[in-house]
Image 1 (cartoon, helix red, strand yellow):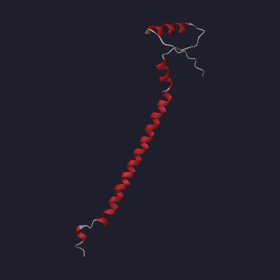
Image 2: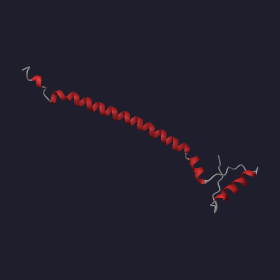
Image 3: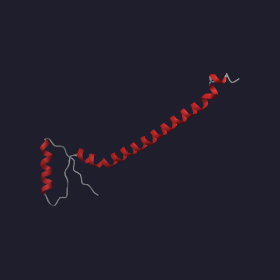
Amino acid sequence: MLTPALSSSWRSPTGFDAVKARLEADPRLLLEAKPEVQFYTEQSEALSTFIRLLGLFLSFIFSIGAVVGAMITMFASVAVRPLCVPLPWTALMD
């Protein structure tokens, strides 16, 4: 969709409102007047939502990976423990 744009600066805050009223009063023009900040905010909503969802998805996957990595490390350290540290009652069995 083609979006015609008009960019200008106003000396007073009511300047924009006056031009907006004139544009909306003319039935020949199919324009929607809005401030530049509002225009770019609306344009970036879809990308912002995508980046937010992608970040949540990746953080969820990485947190699962961190938990699995911690579990593997703890299981490995517990599994090796009897080989490294002799237990006190093993000396009594000899």
